[in-house]
Image (cartoon, rainbow, N blue to C red; front, side, top):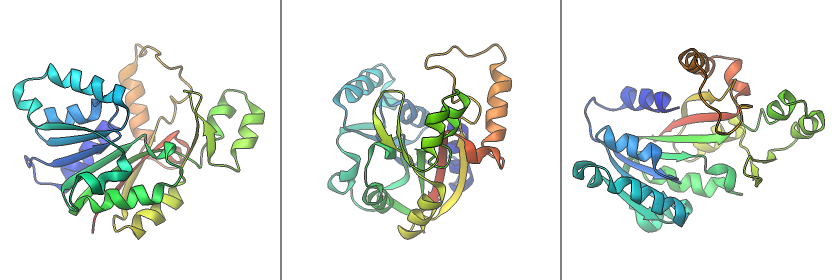
Length: 233
């Protein structure tokens, strides 16, 4: 997914431009730090105090030039208007967050308001059109049948969460002034791999296959996750 995000950034902004990036629900800051190291100025917003502490600890070990380009705020992604002025960012990331939000539309509208004209909104969501794939490939036929008619599911942490459908999000993005420009599938062939599994010896080939499938119909449509990129008009 990092390669997909880099592709969108390179294709939409001048080479060498130091972008203002907001990472909503940044977790431990992995994506945020990667972008800071690439030269951008990143603000990470995270409501889990443990994640915030972990991100700050990691950041403390970075060189001063990187530390001064990253700001970490403990807060809820639905309150971006409290922390920032509209149009404050060139790129807004919201990866792995929407599944925990019961009503995502207000959150998405708030994120779109944070974008400057031409700004990029990057979303990573659970694919609501492919919820039957994981239980089906695992031989859980009852679970697969139940998944066809819902967007609710239980994740690997044991939490009851929700997925998003491509068509619904496409309409939402158009409605908030950040219409969909590109989308990818993520974890097409690897979703059933156990958590913490070691990379196989042929990892390079695996990554190449996943990258190709994530861009190619019909494979991307059955991916576990969708990476959607909208652009502020």
